[in-house]
Image (spheres, rainbow, N blue to C red):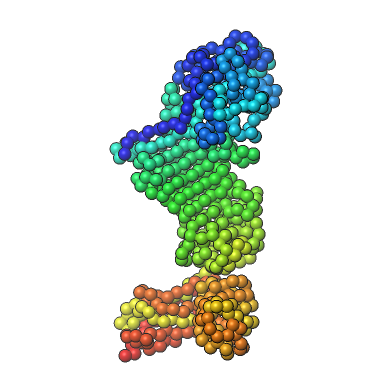
Length: 634
């Protein structure tokens, strides 16, 4: 690698080191160079104020394109000061305003410009400091007035004007270097060189007099940032910083102008934050001027621990990210992409109604234990949004552990339900283990699920495990033993010989109407009493739940399409073969202890064992483990 390097996405229109290309507005002594107060390099352009509106402007005759066609190079970075703000008229008068336009020369003021009433005696900061004022002239909502028809593809007029209640004794109004740009990029670090830190951004900008683009300022260890801070690129980059405070002030810029981008496209890129507070001061009213936080690519790694993101427009992670034991508050959509946010609080999200505070857009191909959410807390913001919205590719069983939900609706299929699922077909079981709702234990009554898009979601609260371990006669784990366990009576949660209203078949799909069946997708059902399709009778069929009163299973495409007989159904909790460890198990929620009955068999191939009868009881709080040693039968 190499030493840390900072590059600026910036064009300097004028460095204010000479009066060339500067013109005056109003009467009195014209603008000149000032060395007693300045921001960049050795001089600034300054002028005295009076009781009539005056000012000065840059007309560089370059005709800079700062329209939206330029992409991010459209924000003008003004550095401006009033050393006697008490002399200004109020902001509304206006007292102190900036303009951007076209069609000017150093001897002719523009007649086509946008005006921005920036400050007055009632709003100028009490410390009388230099102000960084980023303005994107393409944003109509930021403009206070329009004169003529400004042409932003040929901008050549950048002005400071002011109106005072009294005459100043010496130059008191100043403009320094005028820039157009987007932000800074940091690359390099490590392998014998120091890792990148936030101080590097400040040293390159505020700390270098000839630069001072205005993107980063530092005050008492707090970094104030305008523009996008990019960490990493195709160039190898290591960044490692902790215990900092970074703020993103509001401004007259476009959505997405300020923020942080972490680029992980290089496999050696490694970015680490610890105990850092990132605070946005922008507003989502009108143009959303809150900062954004975006991680791109997955080749490198990004890890943040005990960090805070507050008041961000959006947060986007990739699967190469961890944001653990932190806080994301008062912010827009968090796109997860399988990032690890365990232990993080996602609080008072500002997403719209029916959106999720977190959007999980993964694709599942098997039952998934979502450990990346373990220990998280979610609280609802002003709008009726969901805690987590799962994308269209999530259609397999999920498990969430130790997650707290506060303020969400326990009603299904409404804006504000705890969860939203976008998949349009299929079914899944959502297991919630040790989860809480508003401080109380989660139940099927206080957790709401919006699965109206088409998938059927079954809630399984605090499931317990039924485990059967089978060993051979020598005490070795026995693989491929057939284990079957069903409800033994009607005392538990599993249906026991319950009447089935109907079974209809279309192709190979049989649909069972079974009122309040209480079963979950991927569990098994034993059917009895079918008289006209005997191959389905007494079998254990794996089901897909399609509603509280219906489920389907796969059968053959022959025989009856409307089954006859006095048909009953019994729930089966285990049906299958033991694995290489001799185990087979299932998990579900039981409201009371469940009596089971069944068997273990292995007689189709050598070694063969005698059948073993099982009659365990599942404890509704602790589950059950059954250990069996088989007797050889050959």
